[in-house]
Every structure is written in structure tokens, then in C-alpha cells.
Length: 152
Image (cartoon, rainbow, N blue to C red; front, side, top):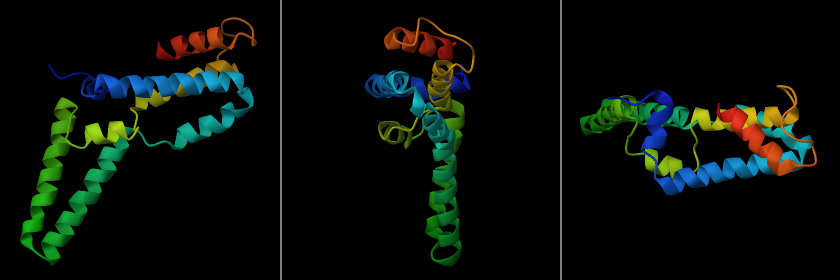
């Protein structure tokens, strides 16, 4: 059975890397709960953040194009590069894993779902969806409620 799109990459990411990405997300939301004036800036940063799928696609397209150009202008053996890259991309589409994935995850590239959880938790803290949890002074409980709502 092929896993759903939102579950493919986390299934093929080490627990240590997944925990680190999750801890960074939680810390970001906790910090912004204590500094609500910075939420708007962070939301703009999240809008510009490249998710791992976009990075894989851009990387594959760059390598395939370079291999094709080099194969056409320099040496036909360069055509092995676009063939390998497209095979890796197909493998990723089917299985949710390809050779660059572990490296990109260790570098901190997140899934669109992980980015959306942070975005929605920050919006919840800002009050975009109405009031959440206890009063503004209880940052930790508000963070917990915002993260729980964002993960639904």
C-alpha cells in the first residue's frame, strides 16, 4: 500500500530528525506566544519557506536540465544524470523516499503539513480563529491549545 501524501516523508525520516523538527516547531510557537508582536513577520517568513517537495522538484529539474545540456553539448555519458534523477523522482512519487531526502530533512526542510501546523498555530495565537485556551498570560497552555488546534 502506498502511504498518503502527507505521511510519506515522515515515514521515511529518522525519529531523531522528526523529533528535532517537531521541537523546533513547538519552540517557535512557544516563543511567538511570548512575543505576539512578531507573529506577522514569522507568518510572512513561513509563506516564503520552501517545503521539501518543492526543494526536491527544483533540485531534480536543475540536475536533469544540466545533464541534458551536458549530454547534448559535451559527452553523451552525461545523459545518465537526467535518467537517474527522473528515476529518483519517480521513486519518491511512489514510495515517498529518494536518496536526497535524508540529507534535506537533516538540513531542516519541512513538509508542507509541518509548515502549515506552525502557520495555523501562530494564527490561532494571534486570534485569527477566535479566542483559544486560557488568558494571554498563560503562554504554555495557550501554546498547547494552539498546537492542538493546528494539528486537527
